[in-house]
Length: 348
Image (cartoon, rainbow, N blue to C red; front, side, top):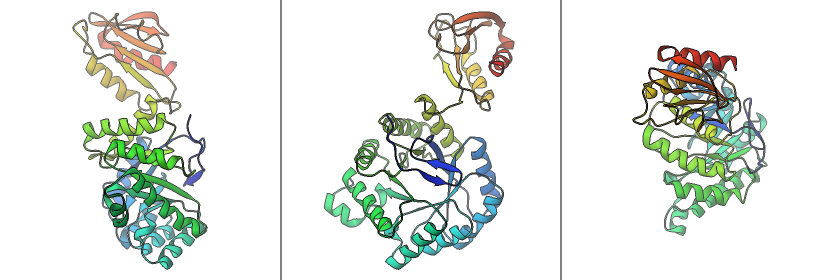
């Protein structure tokens, strides 16, 4: 059962409590290049990304937020390090949330000014603790990066905000090591009721990063931990969203989504199943229905093994059997498989 956490609002997206788990990504463009950043955000929106984070390394980037928000609709999180004035400028230009480490902002007066501005504008703050930038005294205390060290760092930052009367907080504890990350989230989940943003940081390329993220994020979600997720990949951020949504789909945590079941093929298969499955997957991305679609290679793995599917096909000799709820409906020539299946899905 998913742990019920405090509800936080980021733009028009509700995080925590019983709200749907949101999928986040981060732009790879120069934020000062408004056109490129907007184009990438629009692609992320099209891929059903819920929240996007952008880097804010300077004042020009902070001021670009206003123009970016005028051309996009997704909530935007400003990623701020060291200079509290960048956070103030981002808030002034309409950002929906901040990602900071209060501990690296500097003097207490600067943190207070930032937090009071966020509070006045009802802007949530994500405390982002990363294994690669842990406080030196904690490294000395624990002799290495441990789950306990990550949690203690996060709780320090939480205390800074709470001492200023700020509770509009999301927490993340990320490492590239799966077990370390999972242990840290399990530990902090027992100590706070703030929403948790989960992910495996610096997970790697599309192939290796997808595997690591699926294991780490999936493990946490199965344990009821996690209110918003980001798959961190070296590549196109749109792929992060696709993988993130697929993780949620595989755990039945997304509603109104089409799920594809497809067999791995074998020597019995007499149609081009790999190409067929990929084509169908690409063509149903826009369909928002809670359907399970089966694309099977032969009658052995057809209506029988995929009887729980709402609709599907099982390959034959230059043809396929169309079935619904395990019952065969008709035979389709190979050239008409994709068109017929899509038509049946849209009518379902």
